[in-house]
Amino acid sequence: TTLFRSGRAGRRNGFISFISGVSMIGIALGVAALIVVLSVMNGFQREVRDAMLSAIAHIEINRYDQAPAQDWQALAELARRDARVTGAAPYVASQALLARGEAMRGVMVRGVDPALEPQVTPMAARAQGLQDLAPRSWRVLVGQELARQLGVQVGDSVTLLAPGGNTTPAGLVPRTRGFTVAGIFQAGHYEYDAGLVLMHAQDAALFFKTGGMSGVQLRLADLHQARAVTAALLPQLGADWRIADWTRANPTWFAAVQVEKRMMFIILTLIVAVAAFNLVSTLVMVVTDKQSDIAILRTLGATP
Image (tube, rainbow, N blue to C red):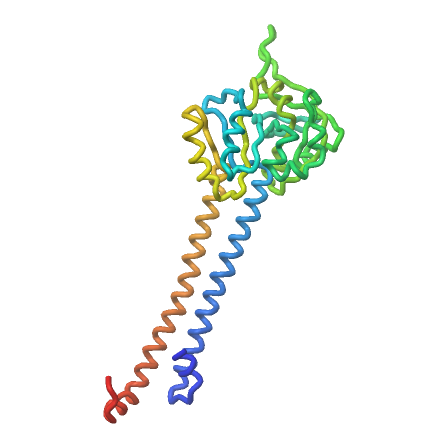
């Protein structure tokens, strides 16, 4: 307010008035840049995070020794006792090679329950062909980018090669099986669109010989409560179980974004600081310019 009045009043030193206006504009631009850049980065992080979480659950529970979760229904019921958990579904996780003709890609294979999976992953809720996955149907859903790379469409046949193999007199023979493409999904995140395959959980357990479900996936009402829910469930499960929340799914990416946000905040704060120094120098000049007026007022009897 002081600078504004000083800049508009008839002054003996017009340079101080000019510096006052420049300082205020500098601070306004610095604060505006800080708000805009941080808002853009927050929006970018939220969009990518939502795309990631459309294909994966907020929390995954499995055993440390990779043994099957035989009684997964009891595990899901235990998790549902927490009011923050809105959905639970079993899953089978493995890796394989997906081939069609001479084209071959490494993929992540997830066995899901078509009736329960939409409760934990939004992508499954809108995926076409999910309900066509049935036990012993040997059908799969593939990502949009993966389908483009392999040149497959709904109804085409593909071949999956499991990591393990069958021992025969001729040696170790890779375990393979043909599958029919029942649908093509779009997660919105390249990693999943180009490398994720969904099939029925029972088919996945049979094909990969896991002996049952790998674990249980959970969906939360508030994704930011993932670590709190993890800390609450871990003592109830025991030492044999491992719980991983979504923040650990892509730690490198989230860490890089956080570092960028901190650095941008520091850089833009320095811009505001430079404008603030100009403001302080202007105030000093205004006080210096007023010294003679204050001296006259003191001579007339004004108090300090």
